[in-house]
Structure formats: C-alpha cells, structure tokens
Length: 301
Image 1 (cartoon, rainbow, N blue to C red):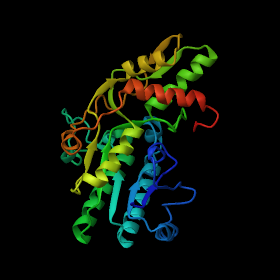
Image 2 (image 1 turned 45 degrees about the horizontal axis):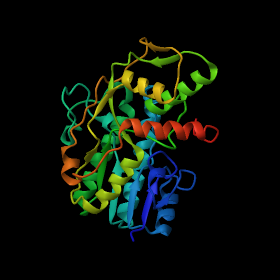
Image 3 (image 1 turned 180 degrees about the vertical axis):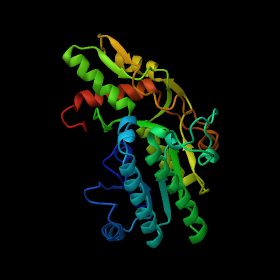
C-alpha cells in the first residue's frame, strides 16, 4: 500500500481523505524549508498530496494580497523542492479555478490559465498559484519528474472554515444563517446574488485525487469540477431552506460580487474518470449544514 503524505491534513480538503498521513501546519511548517525537509524525510512517503495553503474568501483576499502571495509562494516552492530532493515518486498540488484570467467569456480550460490577468480581487493569491503551475512544469522538464496540479472549483464541506471574516461563500452563508436564525434577525447577504459559481464537495475532491494518482499518466494540470453552475441567490435559497430559516433575506448590493461567472470545461476529467458521480449540491449542503449545527462549538469560526 502506498504511503501518502497529505499536507494541510486538518483543513477542509486534507481532512476529507479517508487515509494517508495527515499533517497540520503546527507540525509541518512549510514556510521553514529545513524543518519541513527533515520532517518529510523521516516519514519517507511514496506520494505527496499538497493541500496546505493560505486561503480565504473574497474580502480576505482583497485586504491581504501581499500575505497571500508571500506565504503561498514560499510554501509551494519549499514542498516542491523537498519532493524533488527526496525523490518522491508522485506529487499532486492544488491550484484553483479562481486564478483563471478575468473576462475570458467562455468556460475555463486548462490551457487558459495564463492568457491574461486574474480578477483584481484575488490577484496576490492567483499569481502565487499560477507560479506553482510554472514551477511544477519547470521541475518536470528539468528533473524528469511526473508531478501535476489539480484545479478544483470552489470546495465546501465538513470541517470547513466558517469564520465570517475569512471564509469562502458557502461556509460563510451557513454561519450567517445560523446566527440570523438564533438571533431572530434578517439574513444580510453581501453582493447582488447574480454571480454564478461551481462547487465541489470536499469528499468528492479527495476521492478524485486518489483515483488520479492511479489513473492519470500526464503531468499537465487538470480541472476538477462538475461544471454545473449555481447563482449565489439560488445557493442562498437552498441554504435557507435546508436550515429551515424563516426570517427575511436582504442582498446588500453595495458589496462586490467578485467575478460574475467562473464556468469550467471538465472534458479532460470526464475522459479519465467517466464514471465518477459528483455529490448533488443539495446533499452536500445538507451534510455540511448538519455537521456545522452539530459541531458548532468546535467548528473553525
């Protein structure tokens, strides 16, 4: 059986893997090369799935572009050098569909990644992640490796970050609905609700990564998405309904919507894993909401 090291193992994606050696930033500080090298050398894994990153929602990205750039560049560069120097056989890194160019006016495809600047709301994070794509390609070319990156769409699920200041859209909305329901207030949603997004349940993403370790023989990046969009307004309606929230819902149109659409083309993934069944968003939301309500005290918030 392969020995798989999962960085960011206590986060949303890392914790969703059913097996593997899961590390947190407390024990594996990827900003420190020497410490991380020795730590991973002692584990001696066959494969690394690199989930660790500095991540956050729209407004956290807008307020901290330098920190998002610096930390992600450092972590990604260090883990890749370590994997190469320790002769790790397999490596999967994570990019994101939010790093694609703005205003392409078509579904994103893997080859579109560097065709223009990203949306200004997350340029620090986006350029750091784009450089990881460049670095993986350079390492494969110069050192004869076969590492690759996945490009997942918006991930949500159990053990997400539900902090109202730094979370992504789904956990943030779930927490807001929880508080509005508890305090008997209206639900205030930032933005107009017209923006559309694709989402993937974290357990689906981890299953796909494990399948790709076995079946993907290329080293170019691959989009991981169901390619099914939902508007933020419809998403809010689903969360309100599942949460049984009866209060008013107000969209604050003075707040940014971010990119209006981020639709993807998942043809490459479907070619490799044609039988994979994505979790319907209604079911994924219900699992996530139930988990949050039942684990409110210990949930990250």
